[in-house]
Length: 389
Image: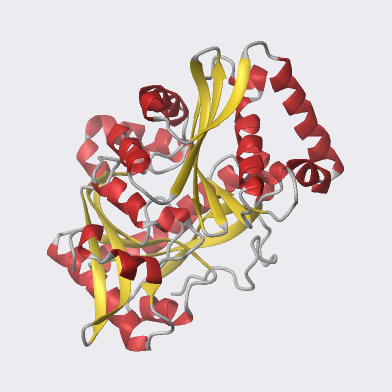
């Protein structure tokens, strides 16, 4: 068990991490560790064969995760009396395995034997017991997760639940105009109308910036406007995180910035690695966000930038599914694997969590929720594993 990503050689991390997912770049994990975005601590579970590292699993430790911060608005209303009368009941010690800010992966070298996966799962459970973190969650893994990992989780008593899907826009067009032309008729008309509304608003301009340290205070204020309206706040980025992302080399980062005169009114922080891009976090001035269609236009600028840099895809956050589907994004199924280190709470979780998470997921996806038995939303052939009894 290692306490920091800095304990792992950079060359090793680059060899094992997904090459086209900028959220898995080493500097992002360094920025997480240097900030106070949510977790109380971090660890990296390492499996070796001889002296060679063959697998790495990042872990986030929450001593008292507030349940009312991570459920949907309906569940939050139901929990409000509990929060007033006994807030301690809503604080749950929890261990997250994978990536707090991105898709879940285990960093592995090739196709390790089943014993490596068993050791990873057992190691996560051992840490949870030592640190008194009863609930253990493998977060936001896709259908591409290795089957030996699923088998090891199931043998260890984990059960599987669908999480919110990721949003990924496939690219490959020669220009932004070609991208617009590739959209179906209604989304194409809507996009052009939103661009016209933005261009008609006096004093607005869009820029792409390499250096934006001087804008960090304004960025944080706009980001907080978005988070104040968010249904769930598992993590909230802070000034040290943004400063660390800006200061560190790699991943390549650009800021899509919208100004009204000299004032920043919207941004989308974009990270790049290999053939992939991510619109990592957004900030909006709601004073004119709707009227000027700021949300859509910073996304259009990010798509334009990703196309210009030769990206094969760009990913956005697990929110606002309706506009992202209109952008042309496909929804990539993801799942949680969850358990508790004690038998009785594990049985309670199995009974109570599936309907609660299903209701929150249905509210978030709305008309984009697939019917039971439907084909996968994303590019993979398998869906998330079904819960087992």
